[in-house]
Image 1 (cartoon, rainbow, N blue to C red):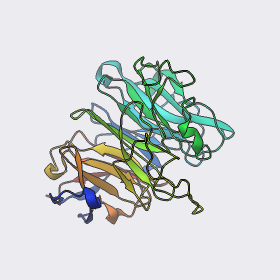
Image 2 (image 1 turned 135 degrees about the horizontal axis):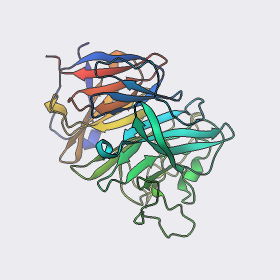
Image 3 (image 1 turned 90 degrees about the vertical axis):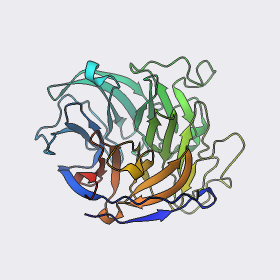
Image 4 (image 1 turned 60 degrees about the vertical axis):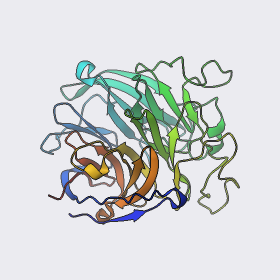
Length: 366
């Protein structure tokens, strides 16, 4: 499948340097997955893929899916958006074999996002440890966040959602709803977190004022932490995350409620950090990566955001750390894209979100 794309601009933010087109082909690397959510590349050439329905799959280097899922997963709450979400490897995985999972835990009446780790040994999870459970437990099955990234000091950040019906709690520093939290790899709280020691504040909080953050990426070269989050009807955001900052939800937003009602009269307020860009109407961003491979020279250093509603991947051009335009890629697939990752082979990998989900590999056309 050969490329089609369309270029966009950021209006006043558009830089005169043009987006350079890149020819590609899309091939099916693996298939037969049920609502795959995240992928992680193992050092031996295999891949792990989480399925929202509560399974962790091993995909061999040739793309074949092991018939039996990884053993040893915990009980999960599975309904609507709830289930198994992220799988990611420890920065020292080759030495310690730790991998990290995020998933919905609890019951329909009382649930939230949980973080755990375990060692992968002979396709089985061992030494399983629960590290963190977001509080409070709430009713419903929406807005869990669930993405994980490791920072330069090897602490991790976990994205969380506002629980949908509890959006005002995104501004409450006493809980974890609508927050990004930062933890040590054993689940303990880093003592330099921005709200440590503040009375009435959850010490795990790294940033607040988020709706449903489903993309996060730490760029080690620049030291920048990027995230994106779902808005309501419009107002999806790309943010540059800094410790202690408040990103505004729901006090300031470019979106409106699903009923059409206005959520806030403000798109910006003093003391709140504005997004780098927003997508209105909504594209429903679901994953974020930065490409530094060798196969696509024109893409190097750019962000890639998978989308569900737009059924595309947005290439977000960065030039000297500044936004320099967008390109809409892979619309020809006509599929919801749940995850996008830069592979160790230099290819770009995609997960399609459906009951017959696939792993797709994007390669140069020649």
